[in-house]
Length: 560
Image 1 (cartoon, rainbow, N blue to C red):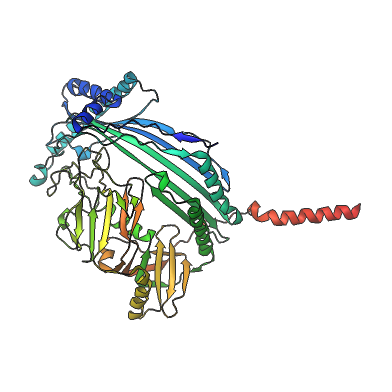
Image 2: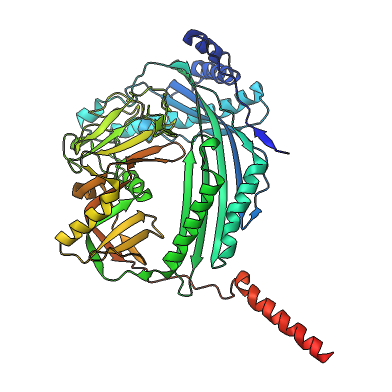
């Protein structure tokens, strides 16, 4: 009999927006948050300390479920969804102009009990709000005193610390129901993880299913009242082996989708796990890379997503300069607006409104950010190689005084494009990319070229291609010099097909493959390696033990 687990969902009314807003204000969580917020914004006060001008509560209601299997057996015992509720407090004293928002500590967080008790929820909110006020008010007082002892750039000092917004009152959706056939997935994971049994040299392996469904509430003293849904489903497989010299070889496969129905069939997952096992074997048998290489490299599949993530996800963001001289050490791209950062053929766009790509749902799609700001459908960050915009939130900078709706966290420390899209004006047929690579290498007088399918730090997947014959073989014990935006100035061409790579709350849309010139590949410089395991894997000894037992049985019979 099929066992089904239902994640409880709150019904979403399909009535007019005004009714939606009223329904949301009548929501249990919203009432609790708003009641305690109004009480604290009016009554919080200590002599000689500023009163709070802004309080916001973020409540997360999360259902999560995971199922793991190793070598044909289920390894975790949790067979039902785990429900966690937590609340975070953000409080500021002073005013919108001066509150040191981007410098404040924001670790005011409490886990909420399973029982929906308004009194207990409010008690926990009260305690965390009290702690937030006392600490932040004292921090604010200390920062104001420090400000009197330093000289500050007047243009920086004139900036507000916290941008004003138009409050949003809207229900974007409740926690979504997810139905899991546990019997089916227990069977699937057993079948998938058992594929490793035939390869005892792979000492570590697992297959795992992870499901998350959530709803986030934001209630602020500005008047914002928001509920928005979230969630994703991930299947992951991993395998690792080591040799007698202490070298480690591993590979993984992961796919993240919006709903469990979007996962590949069991047959396709089996093919992916078998491919993973084949890669581990290839890495173990591959020849060590020798010498050094600088030339064109073809990046394929996951490696392209890795490049986009490394180059753009955490760099194209505003960085506020501290009026007290603290410096994070990160590059500020605001002064580079209008400058060429990458090849003229490349354009990078934030597209938080993009729901699907080639019929597949993006996990990064969102309608309102974590600070309560609705973003534009799209924002061009780099156009034809030129920097045009940066992701930002409610922390004003000279060129970005207002939020564009990319606040990734309730605290507003980082920014998220939701869906980050890389496109190229220069493309060729996807099937001709390798031929183009070899042509470039030949023009540069190289006898070999390289193709990269995975940029994993510990165990990258790199192939050497003979220019004359086209023969392809994997190499190991090598590394690629870390890539950054400057590397993309040497972009050559991309395939004409696009791919979608989902993460839990972030999606990348990029070409399936791309060629970049002047990439450096070097030997690993590791001089210390772990010693190999002394006693061999018992699975490898099974045959010898069986042979020994047979010989012993024959001796006994002979004695008789």
